[in-house]
Length: 100
Image (tube, rainbow, N blue to C red):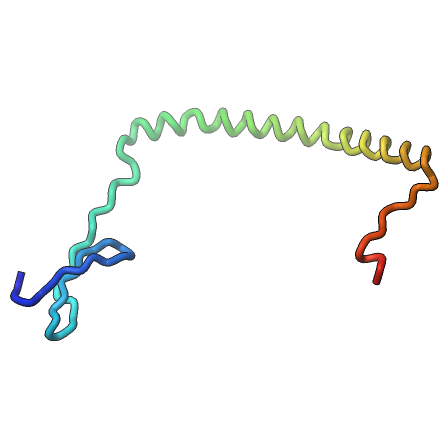
């Protein structure tokens, strides 16, 4: 390293910067080596092979839930309607919107 130069680590990209204090300029920099995103390609391919079956399973569960969703809402409505007929004196709660 040249006389008077010092090294600074960049907090953002973790590169090493060599700075000259006299000129206050970056003279050299060394970029930190990034790890490879995929180490073993065969292992990643095996993970992806089962992904289609998992997606299909989740999709079928959602389809079944959507089919029964209407029945659930209908039962809830019927129950609330029956309660409203049994107690006609009970008024609905006052909403903030109604006070305006």
